[in-house]
Image (tube, rainbow, N blue to C red; front, side):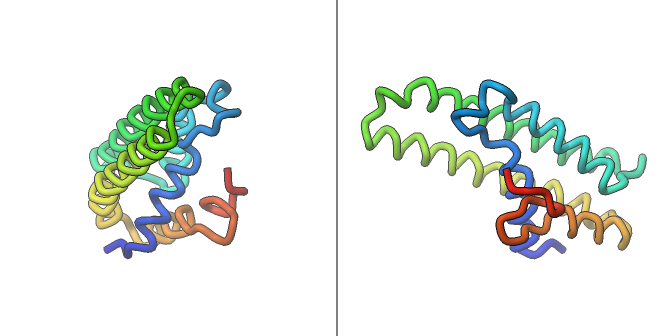
Amino acid sequence: MLSRTSLCALVLAAAVAAVPTMSRSENRSVVASVEGRISELHETLRITSAQEPKWNAVARVMRDDARIIEALAQHRQRDLANMTAIENLQSFQRLAAAHADGLSKLGVAFEALYADMTDAQKKHADAAFRYEGGRGAAGRPGR
């Protein structure tokens, strides 16, 4: 069973790469970032053919969340110059709520996959999603 800390690290690893900043959003979309992360994780976790259905559920949640976050971020970016302070806070609130919802769904999907992993795969997963002081997942520099 995944601890809350591991689950938060999992989502943080997926979300850090996914949330666009104002300067980066035009160069690489949230969806493209998540597609790269999905591919990277599939390889790192050494997903077997028997695990593919559960892996596909994880990937689907990541993709769905990326599309939602991207739409919210684009809407925010488009309207930011004309937002009041309250609208700005509400925009952040919608992004945070979307992340929380995505976290919940991803946790359920990943926990099912994690339960079917070998001990070696679990060690890879644990390392891949560990967040260490300013560095992103798997020791990559934070984005």
